[in-house]
Length: 280
Picture 1: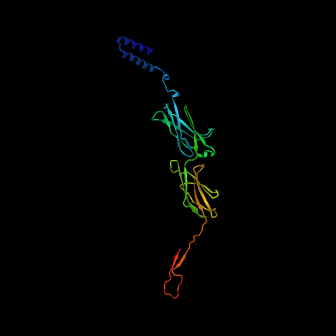
Picture 2 (picture 1 turned 180 degrees about the vertical axis):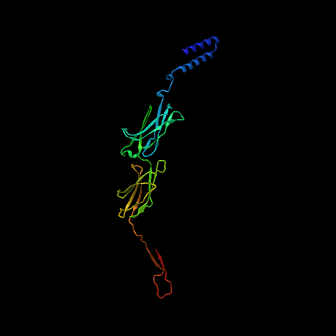
Picture 3 (picture 1 turned 45 degrees about the vertical axis):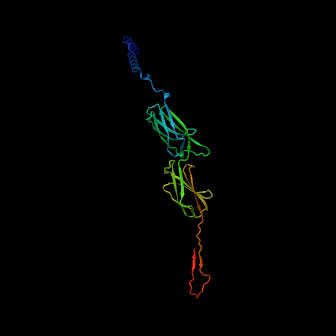
C-alpha cells in the first residue's frame, strides 16, 4: 500500500507542476520505504552456490617434513574451524596426521588458512614396487575438500665422510655426517650408519646423532678390500649416501741404503782420504 500511495502521489505532482524530477524522487522514496518494510528473510543474500572453497597442496608430500597447504574460501566471511586430515590411500581408513585450525580474514576478500602438515614415515609401510599416495582432507561447516597427493620418503639429504681413505686392522674409522633438508638447512635428525665388508655383509648398524659421533673400531681379524660406510634416515630407504675406504694389512715400511765409495780400492798405508757417499 505504501508503494502505490507514493507512486500515485508522485504522478499527481508531475501533472500539476510538469516536473519530471519530482516523479523520479517519488519512485526512489517508494523503493527505500519498501526495502525498510521487507522482512529480514526476504532481503537479497549470498546464495549457497556463490560460495566456493579452494585447497592447494604441494605436488609431492615428503615424510617427516613440514609441508604447507592453503585453504581459501571465496564469498564467505564467517569465522569457522576446519579439520585437516591426512589419510591413507585408497582406503582412507587410517589417519596419518590431523589438526584443527581457524580460518582468518583474507585481505583480498573471503577467508583463508595456511596450516602445516607433517606425515611421520613410521606410520607408513614402504612398497618400492609402486608409487604411494595419501589423501589430504579438509572438513568443516558446509566444507568438504579432498585431494590425492603423491608421497615421497626422501625427507632430506644425508652425507658421510671418513677422515682417511686407507685403514689397517684394529684402527678406528673416524667419520662425520651431514644432515640437511630440501632448503639446505641443517637437520638435527637421527641417522642410521652402517659399515659393510667388501662382501656386502653389514657388521655394524647404529643410530647416531650428527652432533655426537663416536668412531667405529675395525676388528683385528678383518676382511681386506674396499669397505662401505652408508648413512641413511631411519624408516627410509631413500636418500642414502655411501663413503668408500680401503682396509689393508699393516706392512712395516722398507727402505734401501746404498754406499758409494769414491775409489774402488784403498791403500791401508796411504795418506789419502777415503770418501764414501751414503744414499738412503
